[in-house]
Image (cartoon, rainbow, N blue to C red):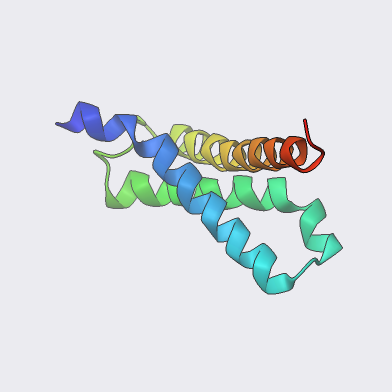
Length: 98
């Protein structure tokens, strides 16, 4: 069972970071300073979630130490930024009639 839990750690962290960033963007309503720091914010939030998973639910994240948990979390946070860009670029194609 723990093997299956380890498979969902990266997508779970990415989804949490993605929706957190979306809520903050909606709340700040177009703040350009925040938009410049979205990838950094996503990486930091993902790293915090990775460390939290390492301590609170060690079965969820397959990390032998805290540094690996931090890197997995930060990479998961940056994955959320990439997912956002994919959705945005696909939406541009539909708007321009392609």
